[in-house]
Image (cartoon, rainbow, N blue to C red):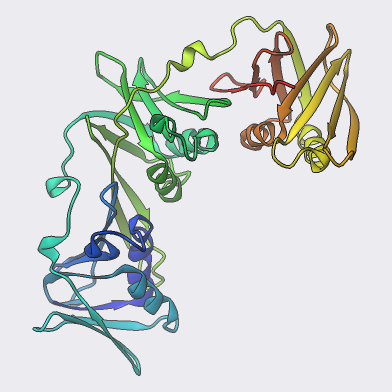
Length: 384
């Protein structure tokens, strides 16, 4: 195998797959990426047996001097490419004794390789059997961006450490919860299945998808099977020499478990509607939370007629109090919330105001953008 390629194009292709590669793995070959070179195309594969990324780019005429395939250490190859001068040309060759020699200018690097045929793939030939859902790339990115923060990080309830993707009735919905809060966002999609389709996408896969997706309006087709989910994304290359498209095929294992019935968690009987200025609420929470208990991050919210008092204290006898004007008419109500949970929700709301729907002090709060019902957030109060 031998290939001559610009540093910009090779590094761009590598950057889209290296996120799937773990630095330490029980299988040494999974620290490598798989390189495949044909007359017209370079294909690079990275995997950790849970998330698999395959990026392909068209090659210039004459770039492929000898077709072939191999696997090389992922991080080392990326670090070498980053260290080379801008606009460098790379000559990459695999010798008969299975060493990878990389030359550029006066630099020469030799990397060990492992056989390409030993590289494990999640799906044979990249084909995943399942039902298809069509959605705009920008809409899928919004769904994940608006809900990812509420995934559990480490939880014995492993099904909470991912994002529920649900398709049905012309809608695609993303739901996350860690037991203390819940995030739900939905958008229109094309799904022709007769029954509601559900899949739980792992945390790492969600992060990789967020990184790959852009606000482009191009339609994407999600293929959701029993064990795997697959989607192909077309990206524009950063290669300055030519406008070269890179196609990334994303495949992930799905979490095998049953996600809780999130509909039962949504508050139904809230009769107290509060409207608060978005930026003022965020800034006030940040200030008051400075003196909250470092572990619990609890902040008291006291709602009165058109007035909100935020209050926090800690075991060191420090206290913070701040008053602000709001739109609220009703009985006085005092609640306590984890400040970070509220800040996470406010951070993904884009309107000028935040709407809280409340019922009583110990009942969960429904938080949303008052201008749309496509995203809903539930935050449980702290019991103090």
